[in-house]
Image (cartoon, rainbow, N blue to C red; front, side):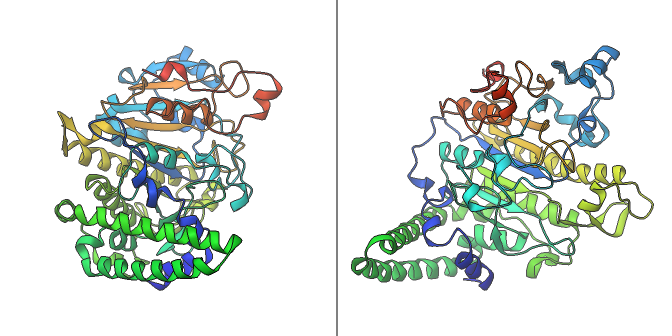
Length: 465
């Protein structure tokens, strides 16, 4: 086990007892989804907010402009309008697009970071484990569509000067008071996800070590009592889950071998010298391979956060751009903050376009893999750099078999704390209800809505087919 992984498991909530509860390891035991082909979900988190004007359609009529500016309900056919410049790379896929406006996220953390809360619809404090109230929406969906890994999390984050690497704490949560792990650089993700093909001896060694640990810990558990015994019991369960996962992954080796991504040499040793576009491309290749090979049906990708260094941005190749700095309107090399923000978004959207194009090329049933895929691109912290959570725009790209009635539309829902308003909790409830989980409501309630005694639980019914 690499030292960075070993140290992480020692120091994070994913050590011993937490691993036993992680769907990435034990969702193999979940009931299979009722579908010929699994549904797939790609959550792409971005930092610095999405400002409402950035998703406004440039060809709105005067009446539509007024309604949108006043944040009044609005529903428009995208086929009759031009997209904003930064969304142009997705123009060929407009029929799959939804610009969903008007959701709020005040029950999650806002400001600079949301940590785990934006995907769990809860207040969590500053990255505290005790504040994690429930499994995040990505893990809940992963339970409905089991796979060997259950859930894969990737991130391109850093410390303003350089990217993180190895296996590190993630932002998703498998359950209350737990934090997921994630792969922070393409090479680590490649090695860990595809080692049944790239390094089968490592898998065999892992299994041998796991067997030894299981026997050793079982012996210790027999002579211990109380809390420590429960910890060891959870550890043993996690070991068994890892072994079962490895067995399933080994069976996929022929499929993995046919779909291995190719990594450039620059990504070796953590890829600290790779530019941001190079890292994004490599992570997209990893993401695609993990879905195409069947290792997972749910991927969460933090494509950037405020401390992610932006290197090699087209037009600013020589700059090391701080996302935090541009959030405070700081430009670089004579390029304005607004223009740099747009170029960063274009880089994100180019990766979404690549993902759609590739999945449309993979046959599945009477169509292609993308038919059963939904991509959700959203700001982790709402409507701006210093957000309050009153708006959290989502860009959704969904295949033809999408179980929601939202395609090819710009949809603005009633504004925060007004009749008919919907929160991210309503949105996540909609996703779960549409895909087989009939729960009444996912997430915490909005205090302003509660004070006004406005209904706020349940799915967004007009979206359900």
